Length: 443
Image (cartoon, rainbow, N blue to C red; front, side, top):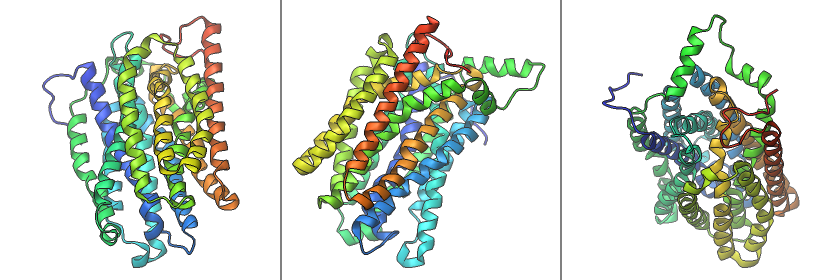
């Protein structure tokens, strides 16, 4: 696609801000679907005689997007490590925006039968492909352009994209939920999806102003000058850096396991405890505002802290807090749900802010995009894709929140373990975790 001329390169802060904006737009699209799935799609695309079954069927479609993310991550990262971060990010943004708008145009089950559900799942798959290529590129734009000693601070900018996307999607949906219910179910739910076309234009304008980093430019030139042909990045990654991949998957599990408390718990509460569907958006709004405020308050302090310890603490906090949130919802109703989810989300923000720069430093420049994407998206399949499907089946069987809480505890414990192993690897090599350009955990 032709690129408009750029009068001057953006500053590191400008590049990081552009990465944040693009990431927020993609997560807006992703969470518009996730939120609408549990308050509308159960009725319009998966109608059954049992409201819990309909809700769980709709929720399980979230897993389809996560299952597509590794494929998108490998595909976009291959070209990102070879062609450039910018072009792949523009492509992923176009793909995401188009799929989201088309969801807003879909006929429902009453109009075309089961084909409506099939089309919905297919578009969710496309969303997964697009967001699979987003995270690694956005992180690299911010980290590779960061000044020395500021990787965590600048790398945290794309991390704002998720809570900002949650907040924006929840606010827009909550506005249209003010409509009479029959109007909202008829056409109101579609507007947040159709608005993605506006966000797509904004994102393309912003990303057109980004230059490739000097680090990537040097790497591309060295590959071009090499006498032997370059290897396929994903093959290079899995043959030479497989230990780093295992650690990277482990430390990111809590990021996706958090969907158990942020998405599944509010949806479960609407059916199990007869709470209004508006409680889903209320919970997301309060939690995302808390997350944004917490991130803004802590990001400047994290470059001087032990990153592995911060990540380990985040896994531990999530493992301990998840069952408490389910109990608080059961015992204290809507107040317990909103306050509990918000507090739990805010508590893992130091972990979340430190994650992007930690992943970037696991891999050398020639496979960095691929390494980050593979780690992030494999964990998304395990904790974000297969988990919603498994939880839907388990919850239908036992009619209890215990399987969901147990899954959250497991993902948090695995993150804690991976962070401890990463810390030991850094200690044994006598290389500071915050400064090393590539992990000592290579195969």
